[in-house]
Length: 190
Image (tube, rainbow, N blue to C red):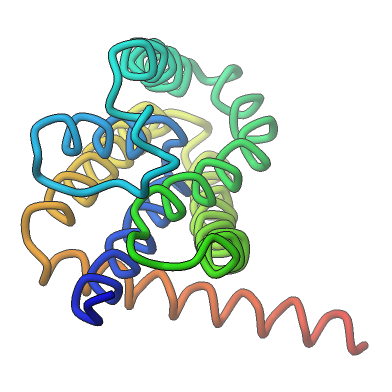
C-alpha cells in the first residue's frame, strides 16, 4: 500500500464526488471512460464501471440529466429528486476511486467524505440556482445549467489528468463541506 497511491486516489475521489454535486452521472461516466482508457485505476469491486453495460447506462443517464436540466420546470424537479441520487453518486465515485485500502475504510470514506462533499456542493448549487432563478425570472436558468455542465465535465476530466486540478477541486469541496457541516451543527445546537 503506497501512501502516494492512497492519497492520490482519495484526492481524486473527493474531486469527483464534488462534481457529482453538480451532475450525478457525468463524473461516474468520465471515471468509467478514464478507467477503460487506462488513465485511472478503480477499486477492485468497481471495475464494472468501465464495462460496456455500465458505460451505456451512464451515457443514457448523462443525456437525460443534461437535457432535463435545461427545461425550466423539469430542472427544479430534478434538483429535488437528485439530492439523494447525487449524494449516492458521490459515495459511489469516491469508493470507486479509492485503491489499496481495506473495504471498511473505503466504505467510511465514501459515505462520510464522498457523500458529504457531493451533498454540500449540490445544496450550494441549488441555493445559487434558486437565487438566480428568482432574480432573473428563470431566464438565465439554461445558461446557468450549461455552465454547471461545463464545470462538472472539466473538473471531472482534468482531475483525472492533472493532479493539481484534483487537489484544488478537492480542497475547495472540503472547505465547502466544512462550512456546510458547521452551519448544520450550529442550527442543531439552537
